[in-house]
Amino acid sequence: MSSGRNKNQLSKIIILWLLKMLWRLLKWAVLKVFVRMFPNWQSRPPSEEALQDFYKSIRWSRLSRWARDKYGDQCMKCKKNSTAYPRLRIVTDHIKPVRTNWWQRWDKDNLQRLCDGCNRAKGSHDTTDYRNYRPIARWAAPRKSSNPLTDAIPSRRFGIVPTYRYPSGSIR
Image (cartoon, rainbow, N blue to C red; front, side, top):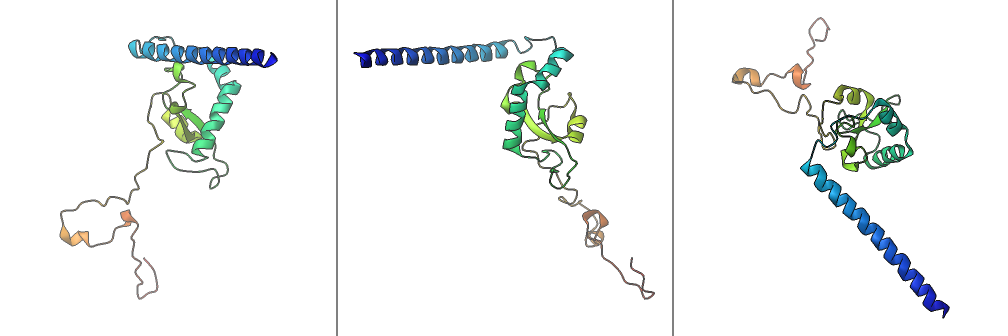
């Protein structure tokens, strides 16, 4: 008789858990549809106090740690890492700023890792996603010249600088 009661209690627990998950899914779907229909539904930016509370929260520190574990300790813009530059500070940055997109502050797809200098230079006006960013080296694409005589001459621009030894012993 006790096994029947346990099965009944277990089925109630499972049903309640399924209802809870269904309710969460429904809330998420309604919110997604609402945000698409009304993209500026929260036109008022958050207060400074709300921003400070957000960045001091345990949930933000866990999310920031998740981003560090996923993307590592390397700036996604300038590609500097904390092992080569020990005093470099790598921070978790929101691609779309929290001030203008408050509802996306917990979104994992809105996070990237930048050094402090690149993060400050980016500011809250730039929404560039540096996760797949590859900086173009200065020497990667040679300059096109119309003069065939100067094309063969090595250039300082591309790091190919010949050294000439003069009879006096000086190197140029």
